[in-house]
Image (cartoon, rainbow, N blue to C red; front, side, top):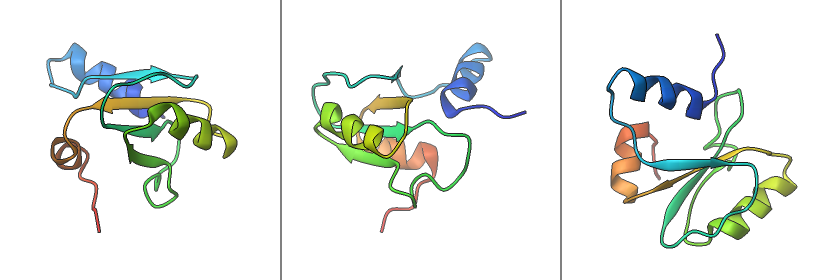
Length: 92
């Protein structure tokens, strides 16, 4: 079974596993504050491909990623430390 990340998060919520708040969108959105914009694609290595970005300008970040051919995004609000821990992303 192949699931997008946001689909897996919906299943987690159904069984009571806590997940960070966020929104799924296919258009640029206005967002206040820092966020992590994660491209939703059915393959691994998004971080290495530059498809996961920490930004304070969500609107323009989504526009940039759309130019790369990505059509669906998940924006997550919160501190970077919580998201890094939850997603087990390695930051260098």
